[in-house]
Length: 93
Image (spheres, rainbow, N blue to C red):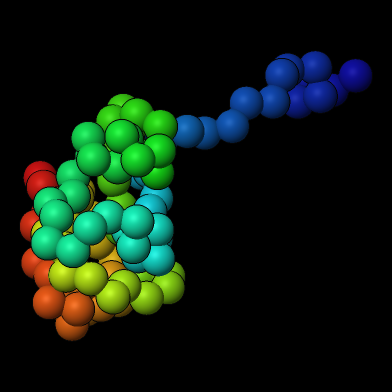
């Protein structure tokens, strides 16, 4: 049997890869208007499981309330929708 078939196959996992906990804009509608949203608030409402991963806000859905959202990353459409609803966006490094 050839050597390449005898050796186990292993994939490549990049060491500098960043994993995100994803939250859509439509899920943020459960918060009250004017509230401040960060990772601990998302955990308490059950939208993410832990703060082990960075949080990314995606623009799927609509938002009707003005919220102050602090997360590690935002999609461009999510930023536009939050600001259009009267809220503010803060990117945490």
